[in-house]
Image (cartoon, rainbow, N blue to C red):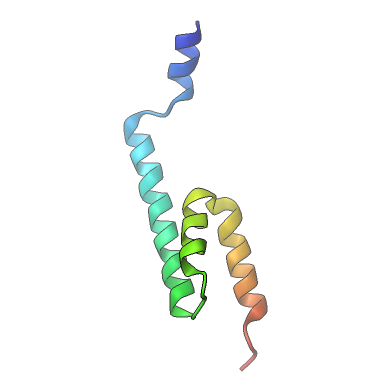
Length: 71
């Protein structure tokens, strides 16, 4: 019974690879944006986006939009 639970709880390899590719793309996009706009913690934002994109990406962009100087 336990082996059945473990097998159904784990994603299949193609789904896992797809999830990692999507997370890496989001991470690279956040890093590139932060680096382009002079953020001194661009690497940290990129790593955070890879690990927890659902939380880090909205926080990053809220901080970016709220800290922009009006032109």
